[in-house]
Length: 186
Image 1: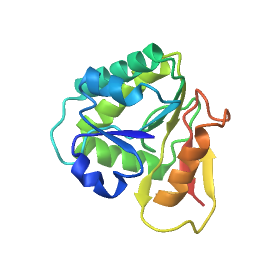
Image 2: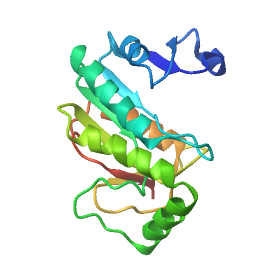
Image 3: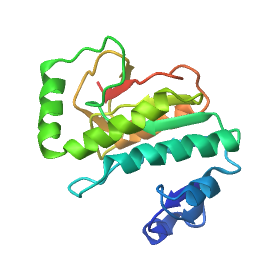
Image 4: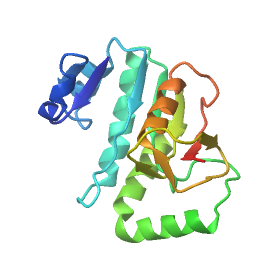
């Protein structure tokens, strides 16, 4: 198992468990090193909240990820988006979701634009991708059932443990390949 990190020292407790590669998702050589020899890629890239970002950088990063995966014949890619991220066909946009998207478009528009640009690259790739779209991620243990649906978001939160389990399950599962499930706690 490998991870690409700008600041590997932040992952010190994992250094004996995984291969930590110092680098940036904006550097093709870093991406290439991280992907070489893997079977699947789990990605949480995206602009940091409350910091300026150039959405175009994230489109380019996604292009580089796709290119490196194709180069190394890695097909499975699981990407984290968000519940207000466009991605499903015939989705239900209830009041909560519309309000959340409006709010985020006011306070974090560059993040929404960046995530959309990533999505535009991903959905046209030949990878076996899954775009996981959680709402607010909360700390805490699994207490309820996680719900995954392409059209409906059932709540405005999901526990980090439930989300982690769902993401890891997707590595081998064909259920959500080339789909963008909304995931939330019941």
